[in-house]
Length: 326
Length: 147
Image (cartoon, rainbow over all chains, first blue to last red; front, side, top):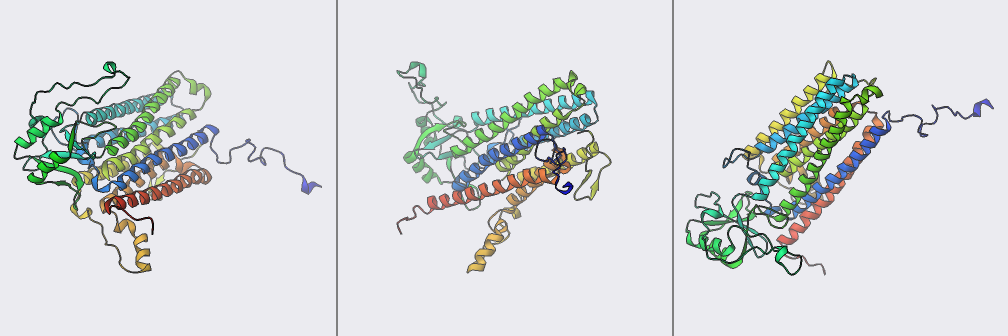
């Protein structure tokens, strides 16, 4: 009989919730579950970005020409510099986070609080930088013309430098004003008025013999195609339709509108994660300061939000590669 | 878990640290170096890295097979390949050392990493092939479906 006795103590009940088969607490496991599902969400977005990019691979904007700005350095083209700075800020805030977790293991309350504080500051700098990057992208710099088919035409001078619309567009008498929802019969507004309308840009372009048009299609070397003067005139007269300044969800002066859509969506979703991470970090920071975890005799909560914070950093590593580098 | 011991060696045991804090700084230095390499390559874009290392094999079944197996070297710019490899390296050290995956049990590690990697690879493969297919259709105008 003794040989068939079923063990009923805690040791045998591996899946009864009594012990930890993966030697991780419930909270940490659930954070890992969440991270896996969130990772799949992000990779869904990035894969969709890859899909659209492969679909229009010969007409995709070159990120180096889009993100060239650094705060306080007006007119100095510095591709990659600012986004590299943002990457470092996020990696460094990850370091302070993991140092906080380490200090938590050693039950050093004031050290945890200090490192959490630094992490929060890093997160805020990152979100602020992203807001600035968005604002710059939305504002645009040179302006462009969109064709009837929704393609972007940019303007160059003889030497191949980009030319802003404001430097050649003519002032023509116009009575057009923006149609706003408040003036309409129904609750619908028109599109925002651009600084110059298409006729003004066209007149200015025809009057300046040294201007050329660059299309969004890339040649064999990966550079956008530049049309000759005669082709440029034919293009703008036949296909030109409206002026685009900056980027929004429908138009994008830098190239394909999908580039702007994915940029807003993916960096926006990531920025939202950073923002919520900062909020959670603040809550945990105050819990550390008032001694909640000292009383609990465990800083595991810091470890759990740490996992989330590192995940946000991990996602940024991929966003950085696929939006700015590749 | 306060009693949890940390694994203090990185690079397959080649680099050992005295304590966890030093390991964190070591990993930070490594991640920074990788990021700096990425940024420098991204700004200068060396000309030799802008065209694929190999051209596709021509011919029968084995040529096709070779093209599939060597596709990263045949169809990708080396620069982009380097960026993606460096990104995965960074992701590994963030997950393993910052998120302490190195210290978790094999079961937890595999259930998180293998699941995500398998599903992401599958999704990316399907979507990129589909995107390229649509690109070809746009480029060659129309493909007849009623054959």
